[in-house]
Length: 202
Image (cartoon, rainbow, N blue to C red; front, side, top):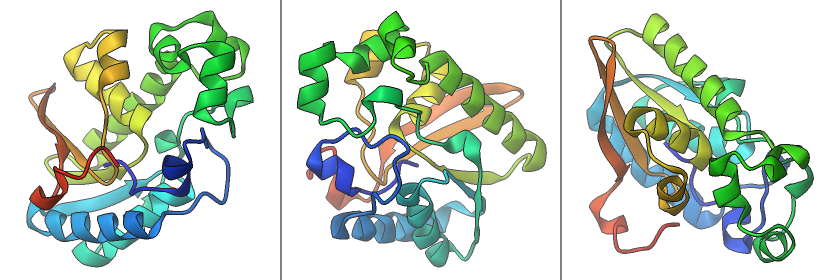
């Protein structure tokens, strides 16, 4: 699950791992609603990114499903390096479409201290392996950020860079992945309460 709407989403700033980027009031309400939505899915464990907007979302959800949250750094937002804290418009004006370049593995990404997409995929798949080993046959919720979620989707669907760039993962939405006999399948993207589908990506 992606975290609820946070301050950086509304201000269009690339927050990365910067501290003190809280959920907005809307983001808190989104977390409450998705917590209610999750009650029927029999979640056995919740893991979350250490970043405030993710672990706060997880805590709100956990209060509805009756579970504590385990923090795991493999669910971190990607490291943005020199791009951290920049406004989207300024970033694009100076460096072009850095998001597309990120998925393409363009050298600009690593040169500016940004974690590469391959590095994100490696740590996310490490987290998934941990879940398979420790919670076999259980429904586990991982509360994280857009790019770690895209990394897992990319692993299942083998999407190209353009498709990954254009894919939007809505705040406080579920991406549901099933594992059977060692194979992953994608059951849902942007699953959430039905009244949110007409509210746009955030």
